Length: 142
Length: 180
Image (tube, rainbow over all chains, first blue to last red; front, side, top):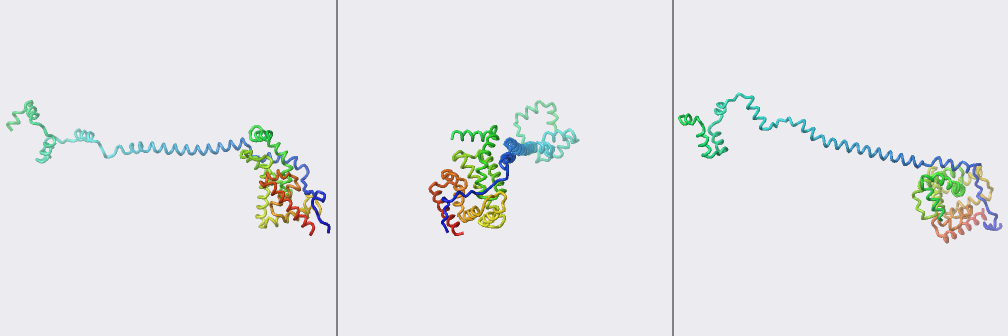
C-alpha cells in the first residue's frame, strides 16, 4: 500500500454544506434574539425602582409607627389614675363637705406635733400674727 | 488596528450598536459557521451554537477589554460554546464525548448537508482519535486554513507548540489512513 501523505494529496475539503440561503436570513434571525438594550435598561430601572420604592414604603411605615406610638400611648394613658396633686386638692375642696371642725377632729396630738415640725414657724412670726389678730383676747381667755 | 478600535466603539455605542453588530454578523457568520461545524459536525447543532455564540458576543461586548483582537475573542467564545454544547449533549445522552463524536461521524453519510465521500469520512474518523487540543489545531489549520498566529491568539498556545501539535496530528492521521 502506498504511503499516504496529507500534503501530497489533493486538499480534502470538509464537505460541510449549509441549507440554501442559510446566511441570507441568519443575521436577521440573530438580530431578533438580541436583548434590546433600551428595553433591558428600562426594565432594569423599573425593577430596581420598584424594589427601592417598597423599601421606602417600609421605612416610612416604620418611621410613622415609631413617631406615633409614643403619642398614641400618651393619649390613651394620660387619663391614667395618676392625678396630679393640685387637681386632687381642688376636687376635694370643692366637692366634699368636710368642715374645719371635722378636720380638727381627725387630727390627733401626734399629727399636730408633726405639723409643727414641718412648719417650723419662728416666734416673731407668731407674735406678729397674734397681734394682728382681733380675736386675740378671745384666744387668750380660752 | 485603529479601525478595529473605532468599530468596537461603534459596537458599544447604543446609537450605532445595531448597525455595527449587523456588520459583525455579516463578517463572521461564515467563518464561525465553518469553525463550529468542524467541531459539532451536523448542521442543526451548528446553527444553534452559532446563534448562541453571537448572542453571547453581544451580551459581553462591554466586557471586551481590547486586550486581544476582536477576531480571536469571538473565535474563543465560539470554540467554548461548541465544546460546552458537545459535553452537554453527551451528558444528556449518557454517553462519552468520544462515542458522541463517532456517532456524529456515522451520521454524516446520511446528512443532506454533507457532501463527501469515503476519504472525507475516513479523515473525520482519524481526527476523532486525536486528543481534543490536537483536533482543534488540525481542524483550524487544515480545514479553516487559519494562520498559526491566529490560532495562537484564539487558543492561547504558542506558535511553536501549535506547529508541533499539527505535526503530530498529521502523522497520526496519515498512519490511520494508511492502515484503514
